[in-house]
Length: 192
Image (cartoon, rainbow, N blue to C red; front, side, top):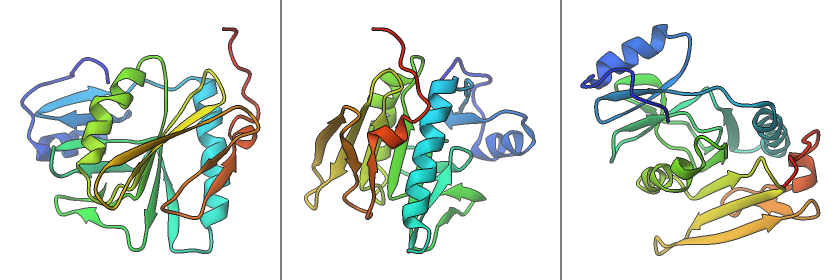
């Protein structure tokens, strides 16, 4: 997130501004945070992943939604735009806004230099408060690496890293496997 645009907004004020805005903003605790644009490596990895997962889910009960889909975490009040969402069964939307999803099953964030720390800590803490979220995946744009956190039946989050172009990202709550080579098709990694 970037610096707040205005503080002490109500949810209704935020949603009214967001409907007319030329750019997306996240919202938390009365503050609106403008989202920075993504770089080409981020966009390529995100589009590749969206395409590969979407094709695997096309005829089933689950579907992908892109980074333009706003999500509300009811327990914390965060409104945000994950890079990729998987929703299974009928999508459910916030009472206060019929365009804000409240029941994603899988959330994917492609990490960027400006948001990586936030995505790994605070944002993940918010996502854990959404009972429908079963998996959280972070995708590196600097190396072939995907990190998957899965909620167990006891509510504990387990971690698995998929590393290298020969690895396959596997989800547990939906029938999806994506080779990292497919996620990173067209990505030229920066020199270490």
